[in-house]
Image (cartoon, rainbow, N blue to C red):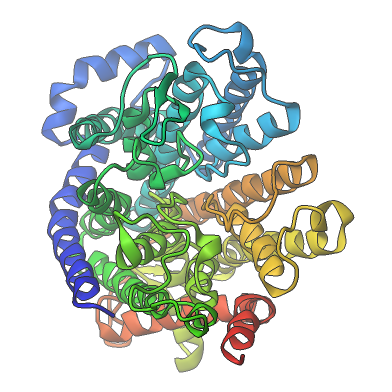
Length: 565
């Protein structure tokens, strides 16, 4: 690895850790209604409740909370589907985009309502400005808010005792959107415009290039969507090239700040968790586990991409620059490897390089990142509630080893809680592996593979792992915009999202109803190095047990074959 790679990673971590504490405290204050923002915006908030018929003082049991979340997202998916199917006749369509096919519309509607943002189409040649703004950008806000309010509900489950409720879903969604996502996205969008990202409603522009060739440049309201795409760990690009496109990600500085934006809210929520449960050490312990795993995966990705392809070396190509295939010259190997690690650990899915062009083990890292369950920072909210689920499993394992009833944050972990934990952990690998198995045996699944052999298997495995874990990135060598893949990945996305959210909310309700037990000499501390090690071990062990055979058939065998020549 180059000195630039080490400096980049060190600077990134330093700035991120400086930002997460104050922002985590702010989110906690917003959700508890005691921030300056909630006081200043109280009138607007009250007007929204009045117009929607919401009684903010009425809290919900977990089942009612889950129903509200499901209803909210079903309505969002229907709205995105309708916009795509009707966009040719709607305003805000200067390029006269045609209506999108039923299967692609279905896939995209599910994708953006589940915070996956998987895209089987090219945005600049498929969707109108109105569909991009009113459909995709709006869902970027709402799906991000959904993930955050679910983890807030789970935190309340740990913080409360003998309680029947875990909050009001409508109030939580309103506050998150109004006081956190909207203002932060506004500031970030202004920054992106200052760097060169476009933000307009102009028609597409015909220009003459330096080679005297006519080219059509797509326009549109890009910066506003790019901001929430990153902050909400959504990942869906306005353009097909996503964050490799200069209109979305113009400079190395914008690239660095986009990487910070991806981890900002997931990291800050760890500190919100510590603040809301009354012990900030708990939040720092979870953040430490995430950070350690992130650093290891980032180093692996940057290391393998710095090696270059040995076959090109045999042809006399200079490998000192590393593997530059599929990467932007303005970013290079280190920035692209770090970006790929961050986006796949954070359930974002935005890309500034072609993952399909990574070295076999360089591509192994993004794939393995998602297979850990998107809990190393993870999506906004979803990463933390996933990690807290693993924390419950970790203390359960520890309790089995020492013969003591497991407990976490003063709550006994019993049969019902472990059933919900098991469902939440197992649903995504079942969807990913079952979807892959169907695709590699079905004629329609094999038809989309451009690269036979181990790499083709990796493309399919990556697609279903990305869909089930709500990441949205792709190897991009797979032709996935077909009825088969649109339906199959949509099923994986929907149940990968809400098949986890419902048991997590059930877990929150069960924990909130429990009595708090006193800390004794036999209580296992959950804020020190031992717990951090146990938590990391649990995440790695579950990921390995689920996915090692599949990884061996894909990137591992491809790596061994390549370097054996």
